Image (cartoon, rainbow over all chains, first blue to last red; front, side, top):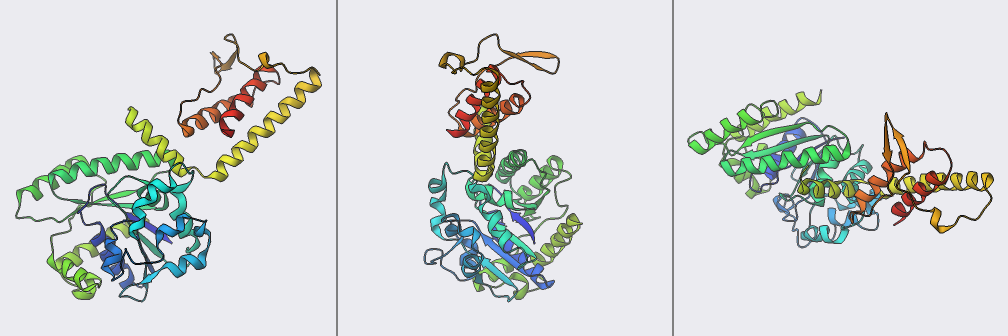
Length: 257
Length: 115
């Protein structure tokens, strides 16, 4: 299994859209994909028609009573999506209380990594949708993943979030004593606005080498797909947003080899 | 590192250190401590008095080409930092000759790791 975390400490930058778009395209390539919702808001969970307030089981429950050891429990927690070869580990709003509940317990940053290890042969890829907050859930994602994708909205304030994310990443790498490759992905790019153009230029100047050299454009078809609870490529395989994510996927695959 | 970064590093270390790892390290301390006490008892079969279980300002060990004064691990209030300090000191203590200094250092480390 290959594990990619889609993370940024700023909200509204396109994390969930990136997880769904990349996950759908990986599935279209024939891969078995697991999408993991680590965000207490449960955007990914809601995307596929599940209620984060109403589910009996979620990622939250794996943190207690060592359920991360129980592969049957984990499998029973998964939910289907609009594609047969894509499953989802949902979030519930109870995840918001996790920080308080596991505070002071050693090793709580490794629960997701251990849970995914139980499913190692079930899936080819796991994509992690993380909350925009530095806490136990984001640390779990960074500890579990082999590659990090940082979607960053092309606007000035998003650059500060990117700076914090890279700083956090460096500290986690130091704590884990390992290198974690990361790719910064400019998102919500609108070439008609000077804010988009200026911030993209700033990203290229500051993060040369880690920045994907294209950008995900604003595309209302991506939003339409979320309303219907289907993967964007199922709605329109050639819309410019899907085409851009397809290019990004090729770029990420190159990074694996 | 800034104070803020220190706090975050302690947080990350705590989340990313497993209980198994801590237990394994505690076991190493216990083994070393037991070994040290055995040697001490064989060499001098006398009761260890409490005043011996502390480091003296003149206790030093060679670190590379320098002589470094030994201090017992202090309690910083941060469990992870304390453990890291204790384990660092333990690594050095493992190379000391059996005796009062080694025994005291190991006891200090054991105290921190068992806390």
